[in-house]
Length: 475
Image (cartoon, rainbow, N blue to C red; front, side):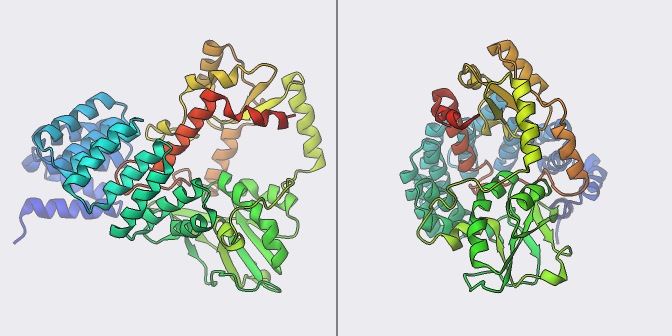
């Protein structure tokens, strides 16, 4: 017969998985008088309040769970992770170190500490603990995955690929293959990399799109006299990048329908007059984007569909080659003339560089993806140019920091409220800021090597001025 405590915990976890947080909370609090000292009850309550974005209350319960459950690795790991997210990095590290001293061979503790080191920009320390994991568990695929992540943070992509190849022998899931795809693309092995990149669409990838569409997926069938729907995925920047393949698709197709972000519809209509452009209808269900296609006109219903980021794989058999030697994105003459005059006036005739230095979704867990503000000094103090803030969130404190620390006055658009525009789009359910285009490339609890790779690359560019070569194109 199942015990009362086990029944409570199983029921609560089932409700949490279904995101039925209120019933789960009620169940646990009703039983708290009897079971309030049990670490797993407090762990579950800590998880509930974290999912409700109440980090303070979450940490209160997690501290109780930790004090009575220091010998339970899952309690220690979860508590340390939430401390880190609350910027209590030193305390989080201490919690893990003490636990490892008491249980030096525990897989979960070693993995969590190794991931902690990587998140803390210490890949060498991460490697040390991951190699200890492999000594204890030689066939542990996640160990190889996380070693690959650490090598990528050190810009050693050959070694990263070596360990990803080993990980795939023990784990055939889409995530491991997606990791490998990113590494192959970084190493400019484009043909194999784009083919592997198709794994981003695997059912076991939480952020892979689900499409309410009864149309076969295109697999290089002839498109003469056929209509193909190019489906939206990932973020605005990704759509702009992968849209460079659209002119080539237009050449070989009878008709192209493009589904895209509401913010890009006008731009694509102006630039690619041969295609029909529609904003997507998307909602997010438990982290998975779900696209609906009731907006498709019956008069031009597609014969096939293809995901936008799959175009390089299907259209570039010989690898990545420049598809457009000249810009294909256009704006109207009136808009061009207006912005030319406006930007000239606010800059005093100097070249303007638009700068977005971090994501607008600036949560604690995402801050380490972007260079800290103090690293921007060499860039922002470049003579004879001025910088224009392209942040759509509140950047007042950042701009004040730049002024006080570097003596730099950053230009703001006085007649455009980027934040309000975004808010209106959110209210229209056009976008959902919870959905991120960045895939978590590790199967562990901490982040993707792709994130750390980008952070490292941006940091190098900022501190070494490697990107100044592009200034000549700014007029």
